[in-house]
Length: 332
Ligand code: BYC
Image (cartoon, rainbow, N blue to C red; front, side):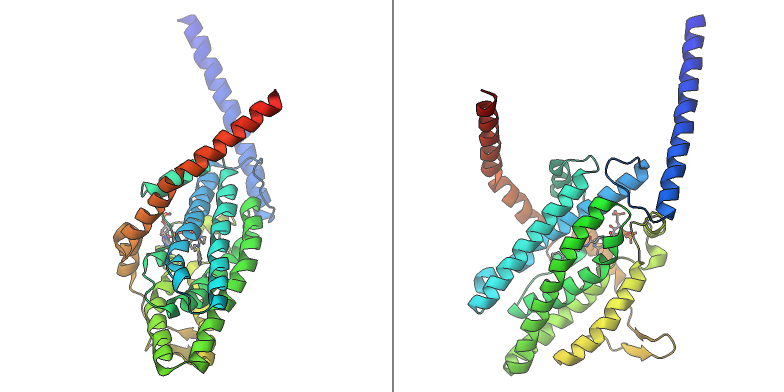
């Protein structure tokens, strides 16, 4: 009895010390965040900060990888050698972005295999936008202009994210995304200025289909975004969903005018008081359906990813066998 009481007391004391230590660590962490410091992988961080980062970084990585599929569909059907070379480079870049991001995610203590398993089992999310089909060549230009345009708007502030490995990855990614956006806009501009009526109609049709899903990319409205407040407090998110969406709309209106396409929103109107463009109501039911797995291509996208992973098993096995042979040789 006596010994047990001693043990209990010792355990309680140890717990109190840990709690005190943790409170101090938490205080130091909060002060660093408030001062705008960057947090490195080896620094102490609260569990929820780690979890939130891992959720966002892994979702982001999955989006890059799944995002290769809709555009990949058109590599074999690109209209010229130049456009094919550009598209190949772009899709390859997206694969690279996924790898930088998985590497950033791994610094938080979760392996790439675990992250990929979460994607393949349907537990992890990826961006809603990649669950829409690419029906014509104009969709490829429109993805570059609008999807990559929205991605840049969202991702430039993440270059100042409080978690340094994520911020560093984002700097490289954003540089490449700007090229992606420009090539898309250029491809559409060629069709609109030098193309046939049928090509112009094809561009308008693509813009009609992609516009609203692109506005959804920024996430739910601020007052319905459960993760925003804490994400902003931690400096993971620097600008809110609604603010970024508005900036995107404001930028696109002029670009659409130069292109000669109409954005499919009868409520789009300049608001002199706000000095922003007002826009119509977003169909949030559609957004949540897509996020919940019921979008037009959710099933197809996941099946393709799982198949690619399974088909590539022999490459991973061969690489591991080679690495272990090399290690044995070196040891000998
Ligand atoms: N799609 O509280 P909220 C690219 C989820 S890659 C699906 O506002 P948060 C590209 C959200 O995860 C584009 N789900 O969340 C690649 C949360 O659910 P959970 C990807 C979405 O995290 C190739 C719930 O809704 N970019 O551009 O504060 C070719 C409530 O939302 C979406 C990134 O990942 C969505 N659109 O803010 C071309 C950027 N929106 O997790 C282009 C990094 C929200 O609680 N991520 N949800 O179950 C972010 O900036 C933020 O995570 C978000 C959401 C703005 C997306």
